[in-house]
Length: 159
Image 1 (cartoon, rainbow, N blue to C red):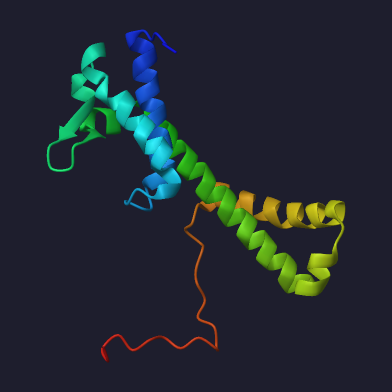
Image 2 (image 1 turned 120 degrees about the horizontal axis):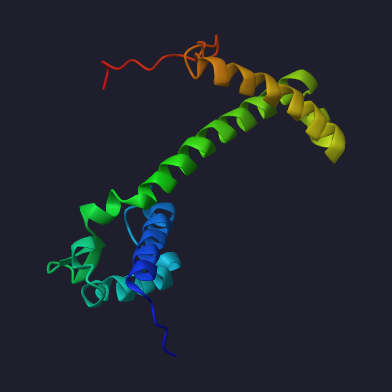
């Protein structure tokens, strides 16, 4: 099978691979067997950069015979999508975790786990809306970790 791309489509494909690469590898630098098929496809696409007049978007490493995104690609439009995604994910997950914690504190783990779907959603929504209101006004400015009585601070000097 043969697929034809315009230069603009190829550049969009590079951005898509940059976004996918971030999701797959930003927290794990090593390539694994689990992601092998994706990195092999990425290498095929990166190898075509010169053919599309986009040689400045990827770099070839002689030391490991692999292509990597060049700074121009890493700092391109894909990074805007990545940054927006990470920012939205941070706030969403923070609100979800705090709401879940508060629900369990209010009802206990067993009772919170036994709520039917609609009741659980309604109660979580109540907690979440309070956190959304707080974070929209104050960000993390008023968010603090309170030292709990059962937590002992590790002695940093005894190592």
